[in-house]
Length: 420
Image 1 (cartoon, helix red, strand yellow):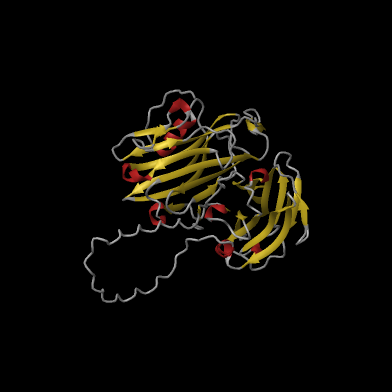
Image 2 (cartoon, one colour; image 1 turned 120 degrees about the vertical axis):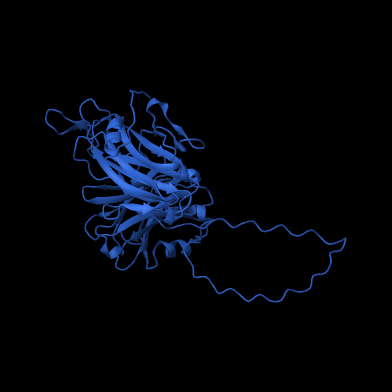
């Protein structure tokens, strides 16, 4: 499509894919959406992005980032049939992280039919240079139907500038103004019998949107939750995945992958050690789902087989009991559907209730591994540190994936067979 052109789109579920070519020095990018009424959001809840991944109406959700075959994609799932009637426009935007869009090769936005996977509309790089945010396109209503327009409007002020332009309140550090000198207090008259009661204090304004995020890499593999302010409330750990090709593990005869089944079932797990010396595991196997408000203060939310970012595999850690933790190792095993992580594209996100979310992708698996250590959370002198592990392990013959992780990290537990 050319800039400014438009085309009709179906109201069925759509995939909105932001894509670009990966490479050394190429900045990261993130897709986002804003639901508008008369050109502005109704509230900060109308902003869907990496820190707020789904709209309350169910019309839009962030489906995660993928990196495969030298191309990176970040995707939104949009169901136009579920958009509230008063919403007139859905702005589709992108923001860069670590550079300008002029450094992002092969940038495009593509709208696809989610069921068929067929393209509906595509708009390629609108000639970006120094911009750090872009409105690439928009859905808008016209005579009862939805259309997509290629926009290509750039911002040099990044995601913050774009968001505030549409009415979002952004939580960014501001320089404090000097405190005013207090005036002498006026004399206070004694209350009479007819003095009205004091007015109720105004309701607290809603919390502003936080744009901060942390991405762990090989070069920067750890972050302090304490320094990020994430030391209380719930810490949600999400694993989502996508099968790049249809594989089902490694052939023991040839040492190469065979076909992967469609019913791939991954299990997110956690080994824990508390400060009182108790140790254990939280996992679906053996129905060891844990507990959030009593030891081990870790709970497995459910067992998912889709890998979607809105569901996926989820663990919750109660950081109100951070002083009870010595260390937590989050890992994932293949329960069925494959014998290896080969050609599995997975992303891990740790989202503290307070502080910035932390995410990282797993590297490509090149060994016949059914178990991967994801992240190690340690408590050192009251400082909670998250360490990116992304470590594929290969069990010895007859050794379970759980026991393999135990051996690798020296947990020293006794293991017995279990079932879901």
